[in-house]
Image (cartoon, rainbow, N blue to C red; front, side):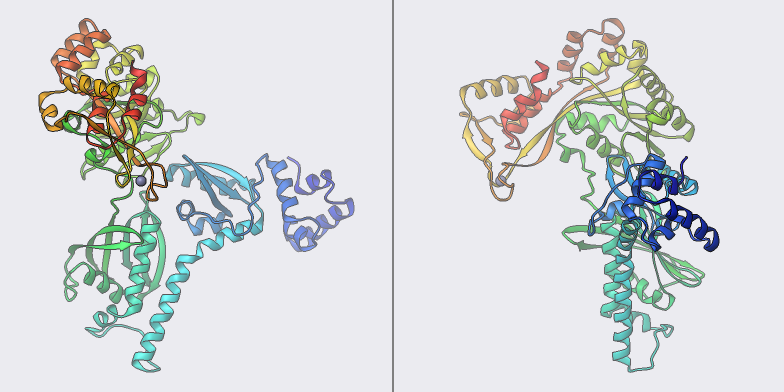
Length: 581
Ligand SMILES: [Zn+2]
């Protein structure tokens, strides 16, 4: 590998005498060549970065001053690690975290990053950055600490003003903590901690006294990070403030207490579940952040209703077996899987996932990012996961025979297995499994439920326009409704003439006419009848007939139901379900 000096020479940036000088000087002063280059202004930071890029075959990423690194990207790497190993996060793309690094030759730094990446579930991609860029990004870490320091200063000033000069802060006298807890700076301090926790997507906040300070830690994506340390003397006031918020007894510090409170952080309504715990060093507080907007949605909210909802609810109550979701990319399968996982995510259940990429983090679930490029595939992952004593396994996708066979056996050996599979509809899932060489006689005892879905844009409730269905629409609607179970037909109350809604556009929906999306579903359950078909004659027409016997609502029918409910436009339903015909 050429040295930095050699590379800069070959690029014509350094002259021979500069090179000689650098070698001699670095020997004398023990300063690094790079530091000397900058000191003597022999090359610019960018020129050095370009040279390093050549040496290590790592691209150079030029970052202009003032470029903001989003909070959630920054949180992937702790400030300590960034400082110690001289790398900083730059951006995120799916499961990839872009890392700006000063010395790509630093083996220790790369090993440390590999460790962090495995723990946090991302794949690192390296870029060389200049020292100036590195310092700029490092500064972004300071904001939280700065805000807290400012509040601490206010606290000192306020205490100073109220009690006259010369009075220090220690809060030992009984009743004093309560008094100070009600003062503006402590109220603000707790609010600042909560704000940063929510903005940083923390699932838990720990406020704990240590020997030297009051330590505040955030759990983000399952990992605890030190967020800040506060002077020990304000610990009782901070803890008291949290207890006041959650209606806990402030005079009781010797027994654990549980409570909760609700507050607005920015535009979000957030619930906090509080638990206090007496330690020999004082009371410790753990706060669980319950953010309802974090992407986990209940099943009805996803668009599951009537028979589909019932079948999914029944399916996920089974003690073991496979639940398979199908649909093209972008059909919302992952969101549905997360919704199901969230329901199954209970204390005492070990959930392990293999994902590509990990799209959303669920507190308490062991999520793993597969890396086919290093041989960590769905299949190899699945084999390892089984040794982790899981109850529930989520596998991103079943796309090869090996994964199909492993998933089937995991289901047969007492696990709930959730996965996606590529087919056009729910009925097709059975054929796909047979195509992937799963023995038909294993399917009835391993498969619980087949789900297929598509995503449809939801009409803007503010500006959607009511129109009379044209004869063509009317024919389609009446035809599909007639095939629906009586109970649903009754509920829908189809009028004559039929009215439907179409998108228009207003300022609320940015003239789109739609806001958000909702899925249309179809679900096929394993039944004794289906078992017989699979073993004796697994042809599509037979499976479709069994679907009809089960009163399966097809995606088209579910779409028509949602059209009649005024949720979506008929045009989109027809378009989304066209491949079926
Ligand atoms: Zn609108």
